[in-house]
Each structure stands twice: as C-alpha cells, then as structure tokens.
Image (cartoon, rainbow, N blue to C red; front, side, top):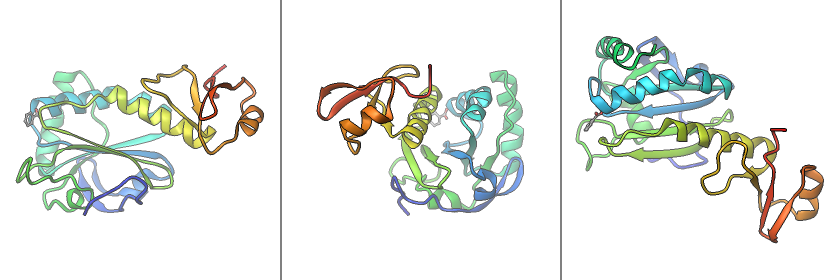
Length: 212
Ligand code: BEZ
C-alpha cells in the first residue's frame, strides 16, 4: 500500500521491544514519528537509534512520541539495544517494532523491493495529533538521517498548525516566517501584531509568532 501526505496513518497492533502496543493508543493525542531501518546490528542504524534516544527531551518538549521498526524479531531488538546504549552513550527507551511478518512495513510502504528484497528502507513518517501523515522521507540504507532536521520539520509543522505560517528555505528556530497565501495581507496585519513585511503580494514575512 502506498502512503501519501494527508492520508490517515493506519492503526496497527504490534510486538515491540517494550511489549505489545496499539499504535493509536501509544500516540494518544501526541504527534508521532514512526521510522524504519534496514536491520538490527548494523552501523548506521545503531547511530540513528542512539541519536533518537539522546534527543528524548527534544521530542518530549514538542509532544512527540517516537517508534522505530525493522523486520528483525523482538529478542534481537532487545539484545541490540544493549549495544546501542553502550556505544552511543544513551538509553533507548522508545519502542522498536519487531515486524517479522512485515505487516506494518506493508501498511506504511517501508519495503522497496528494488532497494532490498528483504529489509525495510530508511523511511520516516511524521503523524499529527489528527493522525494525518504530515511528512514522509525515504533515505538509502547507506545514509543516516539527520534527526536535527526531523526536529526542525516538526517545529515548522507545529507553527503551521498553530499560527497559519509557513517556514522559508533553511529556516531555523527564531528566524522570520512566511504568512500563508490563504491569509490576506489585511487579515495578516491583524493576526500578526509583530508586523508583516510585504515583499510581494504573495511573499510576506512576519517574526516567528511564538517567541518574544
Ligand atoms: C547500516 O544500517 O549501517 C547499513 C545498512 C545497509 C547498508 C549499509 C549500511
């Protein structure tokens, strides 16, 4: 099944390194990051899961629950976590799905047969509190993802959800943001008291609304 932005993320029950979970129950009203990796006991994946664990407070601050997945069995996940904790100096305390039957991988389009006949690709899906898919990225097995970029996208998505602003190229926290096209300049001036800079009728900036 292919998954697209705006689709409702399918619910599932799965065995994980932390026991059985129902995905929607696990997410509750939080944002979610579900990410697949090719296999346990592989170097790039070890660093990715370690970095995700190290960013625990950053995800919590943004009300995001994370969940990893590979098609390896749960006993392998549990023993690999010891290695991740040891080598990456972290504590992996988020669940890793043991998708031996590939049920979740098929639901989320994590298997790309021309990349690998057996292993999941390096995909990552961000899910909003409304359970809609907000972002999908897929990297090759040999390239580790940038989890600081994942946090940046979450910040952008949360600004859009709360303030109807978009974020420009290479935006980072604290920089000016863009008034979305659906808001007229007249309404934008009322909505954004810090000011609206009109470069073109379609290109309007305002200071990031949630910081002083
Ligand atoms: C890794 O996760 O380290 C990896 C997996 C497949 C190919 C290359 C690297």
